[in-house]
Length: 121
Image 1: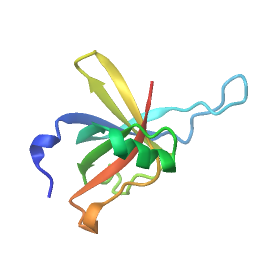
Image 2: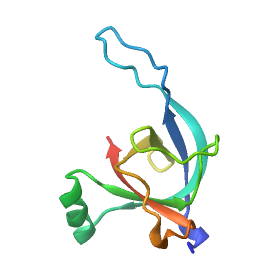
Image 3: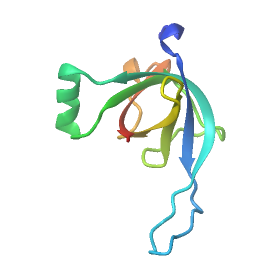
């Protein structure tokens, strides 16, 4: 179980729009569409957590914990096709977190999940 008091960050799960088109350089234009609002806890990695995560990927910076969720169409998010948007009221800007790999579901009980992320600055 997860304590509801920890989930104090209202985040939006955004999905990559497949019909984004191309820019003038021939690169794919990435268009993000809001899909689902989810209450989360955002933890910056610290100390030995950061060093363990660094062995997997040199840039993982945060762990985002949320209740087990599905998208609006009933499917589970696919790594690479979604990101997490959080409006930080303290500094007045949107923060974006790109998941690295799929959600980790502790104990495989479908209560909550941890998503290891890179924060886009």
